[in-house]
Image 1 (tube, rainbow, N blue to C red):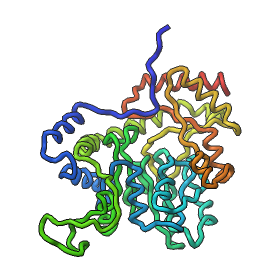
Image 2 (image 1 turned 180 degrees about the vertical axis):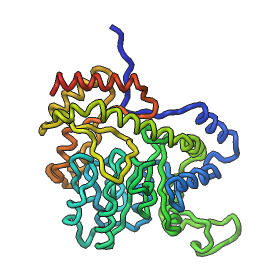
Image 3 (image 1 turned 120 degrees about the horizontal axis):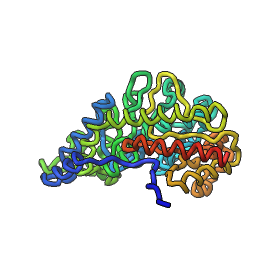
Image 4 (image 1 turned 90 degrees about the vertical axis):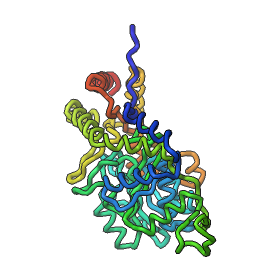
Amino acid sequence: MSVRPFIPYARQHIDDEDIAAVAEVLRKDYLTTGPVVDSFEAKIAQRVQAAFGVAFSSGTDALHGAYSASGFGPGDEVIVPAMTFAATANAALYVGAKPVFADVESDTGNMHVSQLEPLINARTKAIVAVHYAGLPADMAEIHKLACHYGLTVIEDAAHALGAYYHGKPIGAVSSLTCFSFHPVKHITTGEGGMVVSDDLQLRRKLQRFRTHGVTRIPEEMAGNDGDWYYEMVELGYNYRLTDIQAGLGLSQLEKLDRFLTRRREIAERYDEALKDLAEKERIQLPGKREGRQSAWHLYVIGVQNDHSGERRKSLYDYLRSRGIGVNVHYVPVYLHPYYRSLGYTAGLCPKAEQFYRRSISLPIFYGLTDAEQERVIDCLRDGVKACL
């Protein structure tokens, strides 16, 4: 019996144009801190209708920079959704703030806006909205609440490059939006991230933060001994993206529309092929919202009537045994041992915990062929019969 090739849940797409773009940078004078990074920042900002982009060495570093530029520190609280990768919350800890976890919507995994107001107190400084799986969160209500209480809104859009909220691209909705260019995302720079903003002062803070706290801008320095002069005016980090990575990013960005179109085709095909299983209440399909166009970073189904997670695990194991690289996104952040050691306990966000126990991420990426997707669908249908 032949072994069928493994189908991952996600994979980057690198073509000859990408390789040539990287090789071209390698032949130039600047491998880092050069003009290709500047060009990449400008192109991303233009794409999402923001004034500025500041590139970072990862999406996590971008979040760290955004939290720092916003002035969060010890004694402050930052509201984040429980259903996200740990980096969203970790970045609050990096600056000495406390992450406060909000519960999520049962069908989308996005933070539930009705759960936010009870979490707000005198220490609250921000709401961080994660666009889970690529579907924009309820930004109008989040901004309304933030405005009422004088809070900062930051968008963790690691899943959402190319998503739209009521006609606006994600990146043009809030004063700080963070993107990720990890290989499983819509475009990749290997590792990398970016913060986009319309605020010049935030841009300068972010630029200093990623470069050791160093500036060459005359009005930011105490002195000036000549053209060579610079000053470290605050504590920063080495979070720079290289020109090599930016060259790859620019080449990838030219293909973003094609990548997004294919992801949406795959999602639509899953919707159609699996709707009978949803109607029979065997699985739950990803939730949608009017006026919000998902970028489909993930396609997450839920196993219906599974309160323990055992049925989900059986289906997950069945699919993996047949070479279907399903995954689970995510363990609620506060359930990780490190967060338990900080005093967070199970039961804090019951909908997020149930979402976790039920969810399975199906393969979705640009290079997934129709034949491979058909195999995923067939195996899933067989698995539902066998396990549910």
